[in-house]
Amino acid sequence: MLTDLNIFAIAGAKARHAAARQGVIAQNVANADTPGYRARDLEPFEKTLQRIGSANTTVSPRIVEVHSLGAGSPNGNTVSIEDEMMRAGAAVRDHEIATTIYAKALTMMRTALGGRR
Image 1 (tube, rainbow, N blue to C red):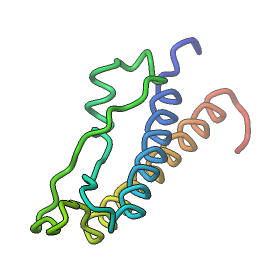
Image 2: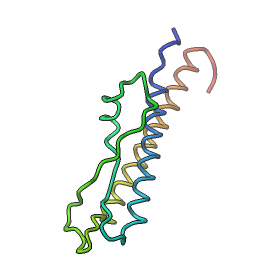
Image 3: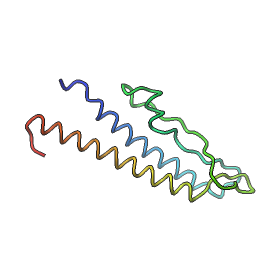
Image 4: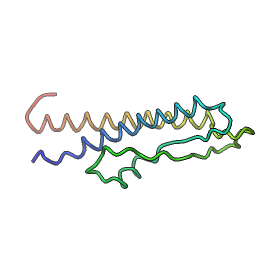
């Protein structure tokens, strides 16, 4: 009955993905003035999950180069602080969604087992 609880594994993997994405975004911001630096991001969580399957949620997502909407810097740097802030906000929301799903699933399990919150 309680042997297949993929929701916890997937929610945890989504939270780890969001945290890793914040790290990549932080590197981009730190290198915003580095000549020739190319902005990067993680592949979307959904694509990572499709690639690895829901049974194995410990594989790291791939890092991909991103293209900003504006023109690149004359020194070859492609980091756009505005784009990075948008990505950072999306990563925060993804992390909040993952932790909310985890908490709600835990509450449902406790309720189903007759426990209290």
